[in-house]
Image (cartoon, rainbow, N blue to C red; front, top):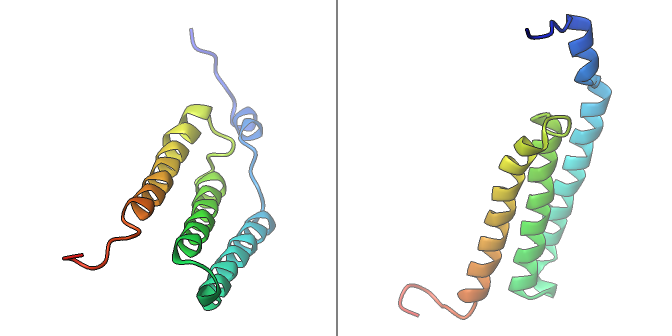
Length: 110
């Protein structure tokens, strides 16, 4: 027979955060976005590969933050974190690999 879990017990099991918490997370994501814009503005002082790796890394941080906090995966089972974060890491490494592989490629015919 399955155990009956009351609403209060279920609520305690899944910690909820107030709006202040989400404002803080939003501010952190805004700071990371400002870093991306700042790096874009000073891009001329670094190589294109370094520039793109830094921007992809910051995008990875933002994506992981959104997944963890706004999609509430931080408190869920580890399998759900795995299902979302591992493909994100695969996409990141794929992009880095393609950048490295085609770094000397110029245009369609090059």
